[in-house]
Image 1 (cartoon, rainbow, N blue to C red):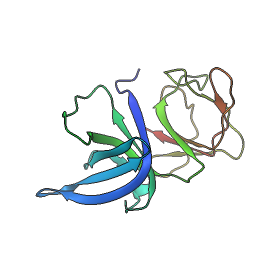
Image 2: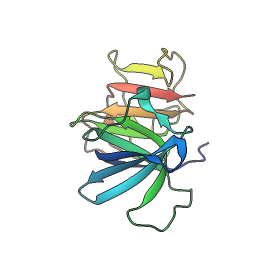
Image 3: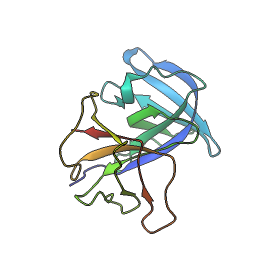
Length: 158
């Protein structure tokens, strides 16, 4: 089903700089309690809602742990997805089955009428969510195994 294992890194954008002479890619430094991580935001990176990344912005960036990374410090990852988040919000990205259980079995979704479900280009999505890569915005989850949440917003990456 999935070919990517997406790993999140949340933090505050410290710096956004062009990547050498490549005018289409950026280096985005993200700082959190673990230190600084650098993300390459290329034309293939999905920037949620096409937001302009700026210093001071709270973000979550996802990289594919199956892709080799250069052994440099601070770590430098190719961003697959990056998006702005509210301070009290968690963003999860991963593949879900027909029961809305994540492939890694770390999150179960319970939809509510208020859950906004959109495609990555902002259009309403009315089909089954199972078998898709989902970007899930939520504020709280149960302490059960797996944790369950009622998301505020789901973005379906078709």
